[in-house]
Length: 434
Image 1 (tube, one colour):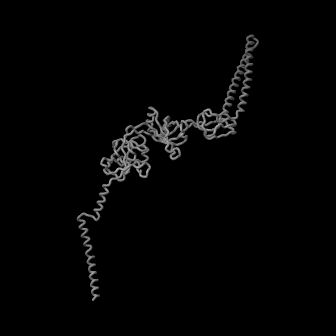
Image 2: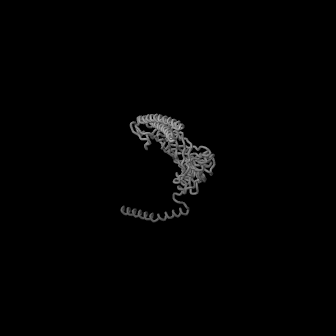
């Protein structure tokens, strides 16, 4: 009996399972049809809620105020420091150096004794010339007396005209010999003077190329030492030829200031040092056809000897000033296919994409022709989620150089370098906002 009851229970379970499997597809089809008719999707309520929350979130940005400032018109270049005066000291007499009177690398004044050359041969030549002068003077006096005597004899008819002419010629020749010996004495005196080699300028000596005991030759190709003047110094640099007219106009109206900064960042005693201040003093008389540039020179007093001959420096030439120019941080300007623009933050804390025209840029500022007004707020960082009309929250600006300071100019480096020079407004680069 129990066996039959167990078999009946198992049979009922099998029938129930088969019925459930047959009815399940129909139920799922009915549910899908109902959802299709109602227009709802599984999970659509959650997704819509998330999208709504995302669209309403305000983007965090940093802003800066548009200002009206006086901005200098600057040309930037790089140059090389040159000594204002450089002299290669070459001996004017031959002989043995008996003494060197300075230490190589020392500063010397004009007229300071540098080298002494053995004077004995030249003093001997001077003494011989003086003795020869005495002899020639005596002979000239005798010839003059003979000429006077023959003149008297000729008047008395005791001497011929030929004898008189010969006596007068001998007297003239003797006088010429005296003048020649005087010139030899002057030359010998100069040679004695040239054995004292002195500094022709104030400056710093270079490497000592000869030492005491060496025999030198007059007018040798190799100098004894090179002296360079370090105060003042000059900086030679070049700018594109299209700025020639502005430079000539500036020189005609007055001096043009020039700044020079050493290219030695990080070196002890140089980092953070103020740039040297000088004035433009030379404009080359021709344009370099190979490079399309014009060569210039600026003079610096260099009292602190900060500029060293041969060193490379960054140069800034100031041509004038743009007064009350509209300026914004350079990183606020963005580029698109239809031009440059900025994001202006309105009173409702929403941004407006405002087209602007950039006149030029400096290291940190962009000068605008129009499009914004002073005291307007423009976005400088946080552009990733921005679009016209997007809400924003203003964050404090990160300190320069800190990890949070990620803003950078939208203008490419090459265009930025060109924009620093006064020129026509830069055209927009292809591509979207960056």
